[in-house]
Length: 122
Image (cartoon, rainbow, N blue to C red):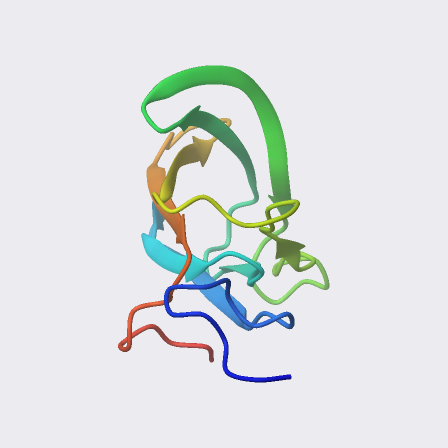
């Protein structure tokens, strides 16, 4: 098989990254293409997360996840994979997303070829 190309794609099997929602605030996160995201609601409120912008451009709001209150079966989202068909772009994609209803908190999810060394997978 040989060595992978320098600056090549992420491994074929991505890691699961967890994004916490605490006190109505969404944690920002950087992940690699191919990674999975699970949103974890640690609040007693329920939230619907929608994408608002991609690379600074507004997009029609679409639902990424619906979370119920902490301690309920759907407080954590199902895993959502961020992949690129073919070779991923060299430049990161920056997704701005937020809560559909108040408190209308926003979060930033950056998806790039390589995950930073300090990124958590747990």
